[in-house]
Length: 144
Image 1 (cartoon, rainbow, N blue to C red):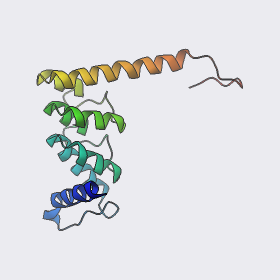
Image 2 (cartoon, helix red, strand yellow):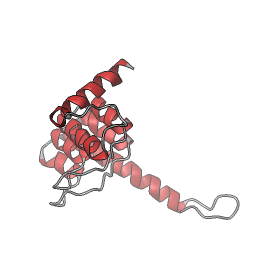
Image 3 (tube, one colour):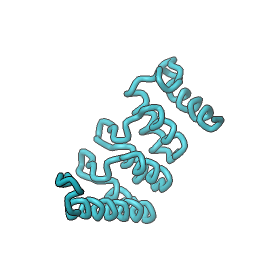
């Protein structure tokens, strides 16, 4: 895939100072996580997707406990926020100052990003409530 090769090259440039070559498997988890955080901060949804496919942790944090979702929300990067949510980013994660991604979007007046996060949080909560209220499946074992 041409787009993936282009993104791999871009991730590789992030590691140029360490003289490492990005090829997915040969890059350390820490480096992938750092690449994910940088891509999220810049709002590059394609590069975020590539780092996630290469094995980056969607809930990796920086020194201040900011996840990629916090960084994308703070920057108002809607497509990146959606990509991270679909990849399983923790919407309730808090920074060292106690801010959630939704809080950061609100504080930076990124209204569309805040709306995405608020609606996703509501849908997730509704889904979890439905699972709790669902009758046991046939066979007698309750859902957990």
